[in-house]
Image 1: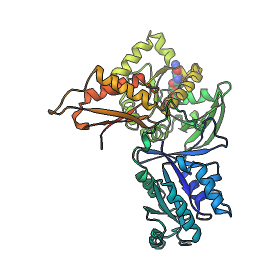
Image 2: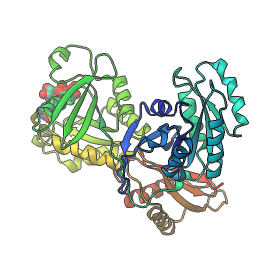
Image 3: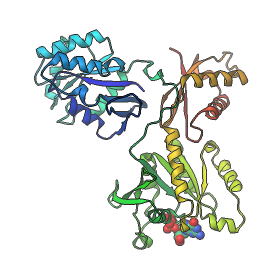
Image 4: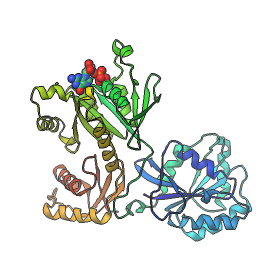
Length: 442
Ligand code: GDP
């Protein structure tokens, strides 16, 4: 993931800028061995790109009186390994001698830079940006943390100025990021057993549950710990509230479920083992597919199905036949009513989540790509010979693989499906959606 660092003289608003951009993001502690201080990084996902906003243990943006020492330290602590520098200046103060000193030093690092003209609290201050061009002839983005102006614009500008190829430096080996919590959406048709599941979960031994308000007025997020790991079941009606809801309008409406799917890290898609797949089921799976969400197919009321001699294989076949593009999705059978298999199911969601956050090494990916092409070369089309050059994984959640080729239009759909299937087989993320993007080599 490309790294972005924030630099600038004291008091331009670096810390507040960082907190402002990172406010709603996943914050992860870098588990890399050998990092002496707790380096906190924020993985930012914007415009289909990822970048890592680096706070080098707070030190990188701590203001000190001795500027040269401070800047020296900022450089030591990671500016050299980052892919883009955000050079922050203060629109209200204008160009100061210290800015000149910072600019001089930054120029020597020779990194791509974006100038952030902060403290433009109202649009009338935006023209101040021009004055900073004399300081450094850089692309600029005006912002105001205080006035909450241009947060998204700043993220877009960062993404736009990430150097090409920064994404391509995938590390060797799978790299797992430990999130603070995993958000689960529990969806499925009415009476499939969602509330029963949540209630049973709350009663399971060694599960610690707390309820907090959810995103909508009447919904509740249930936060629970299993084996030292935090999960949040989002947008639920809460525990033990089924009586009051019984004759109420359906709590789990389609729109609510679709919204939960979009917000979730992993979706538990419930099916009724005693029933055929319904239209609502199809709409929900469609939403899951559309947003590339990692998912588990949960076939509930398994106690009843077993009485009718249903087998997992038969249900599995039925699911695969109904949702051809969801072959990778793991299937779990459940009897929510008696709480059996609940912990295993929760542990499975963790596995799935980790897969979605995994990176495949560039070397392994390209060896697999070569093999896939030599085993089954892409067929010629429109008299043009399809050529594949190399592949890189550019993002996680969902794992996104970009394959550079001569012309994406000369590859047919069947072959692309073959390639995706092949890469999935050798990848560390076999059970989650993968985005495969063919791109013409520049
Ligand atoms: P929701 O609408 O998805 O929240 O469904 P509920 O949790 O309200 O469950 C609907 C009905 O199915 C209730 O009567 C439950 O007792 C029953 N139920 C839920 N899970 C199971 C199960 O695993 N086996 C059986 N036999 N019944 C279940």
